View (cartoon, rainbow, N blue to C red):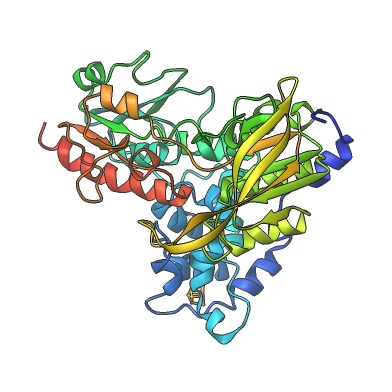
Length: 447
Ligand code: SF4
């Protein structure tokens, strides 16, 4: 049965407490910092999409230069604090650490990164100085990781930036789409304030491209426009019964946990989550932590092909979520307008498809499971109509750009992050923002 307010305040607090707690003492951080081998040609840095100089910032911690360490991190990744909480580090920096080759625990890079960045943010350290305004004005659409990253680089160089954000808060998916036990809404607000404390960046909330803001008008009013509006609604399952009460979109579910508070979010007793990406895991584990009795993740391929990391899968397993591999939903069954069962088809793997992974093929064998809530987490769709209406070249709504620098088909219009790549990690969006900012700065020399 779907209901809210299932647990006591203490239970909510315990279930949603920080999953990666920080170092408790300076000594604990120093012990790990001093384990680092400060590798030449460090593989950890090479596997960070933003190229943070990991051995350098760890060395700075080891020598008690925490300000220097935080600056090293923020120079490459202004959301280095948030990324230290949400990055899948086991497949990035920590997964590349040479200690893995020696079958020893890798350096806890994310925790050390958090050690420095937390101190910088708590102390409100002004680690960057904005150059005097050069008179150029740039509009950024979206206050998510790509938009904020570009805005910070541009403002440091003396560009006056206005960010237009359709939501009431900034931070994008970091604020609205990640499990609350990884990063709290309060932290996201502090991170945003810290980024904006540089100056030269104004944010207008409740302003949506296309609706309140025609792209043509922005192009006339600003010297350049950077599009970083992410992706939109959940991909449909396109199966009968999808409209029944109790079938919800994973991002909306996660959004309401963060926006409305734990006790207000309705959750079922028997919940099925469709998908096996990070959003699916975040939805499943949070459904359990809100008090759902049974949570089952369904994925049409196997563990070999799943998009989430093994560490994320382990969190779901430890939270007691069941997993059905090789199962695809084919019908949502209901009574009185509410979902009561989910019918699934068993799959088998065929030859690889366009993604390079073995394709799931229906076997014709079906099974049904009793559920009172179905959470859809099979990805999000690009804003195709809006992109099309703006006159931009695109592939199925994903904005077409030249090279890595976000140059679109319209002069003076740049794009980066999920609206270009269809949805990747926060750290990828930060890097896209940085690269586009560099291209915008070159472009501004010509106007
Ligand atoms: Fe330090 Fe590991 Fe990076 Fe080497 S690979 S520099 S040991 S964190």
